Length: 209
Ligand SMILES: N[C@@H](CCC(=O)N[C@@H](CS)C(=O)NCC(=O)O)C(=O)O
Image (cartoon, rainbow, N blue to C red; front, side, top):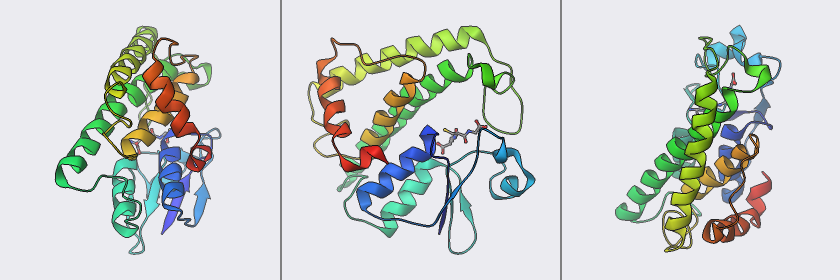
């Protein structure tokens, strides 16, 4: 296996934190997103979508979605379970992970990529260049705050996002909140359940991965 990473980027950090929870380390290659290495011919042969993370499997095939990579790693290294145990819990992990990805992670990306000076013409990842749209940057900020309020309500009832135990959904949400910090959005003070959860996750060794 080979892991294509970029230590400054949030999406591959989901895989790094997942691996750290499993206490597994695999050969890693850094891709320099700042210099545009993701668009090089060599990297496009690995991932035509020009993004990290990528996991190359021992048969030479590539996985280029964080969720798929984490699922593969879960099956290869089952302990500790980070996708839940029984079918109901597994479905809840997938549901909350998808919600945190769509409403948190993608909203933070919308806010960041549509305003960052260095990303003019690169509002979306991939081979196609997309113009920034200022209104989307603002909308992304609103969506992040809505998502944080919803998570606070969820965490008033359960210790972790998908229920009783720490899972991939917590990893996705934790990193999405850090990503929101890139556009100077922090968890509002009144969200004490979300703040409690965030402090707990930040105290895990994997949080610095
Ligand atoms: N769907 C992908 C998205 C990955 C993604 O957007 N990665 C960003 C880094 S956080 C990237 O590679 N960006 C390249 C660029 O900005 O050109 C996943 O979740 O694995």
